[in-house]
Image 1 (cartoon, helix red, strand yellow):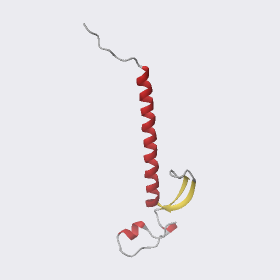
Image 2: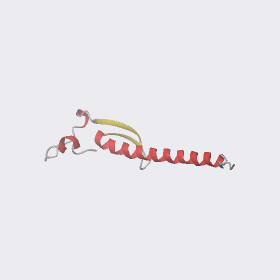
Image 3: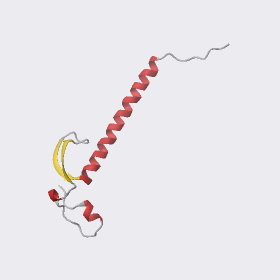
Image 4: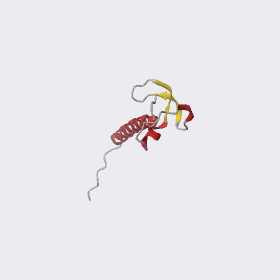
Length: 87
């Protein structure tokens, strides 16, 4: 998947080929792609995977926020309005 190493190429001008399994940052990923929903079973660089995980985390946070807002609106609709007493 990765032609050049993003970590090694970052500090020098000449692209460095990916070392694949010899590199400590090359890892196996199993799961679902957050954007397409397809199953993932591949080897890739941690730097590439980190971008995918950030997208996935953002989507989960937005879903959680929407759920909390829905519960809040439901609870607010159940409680009677508070009216101050006049003397």
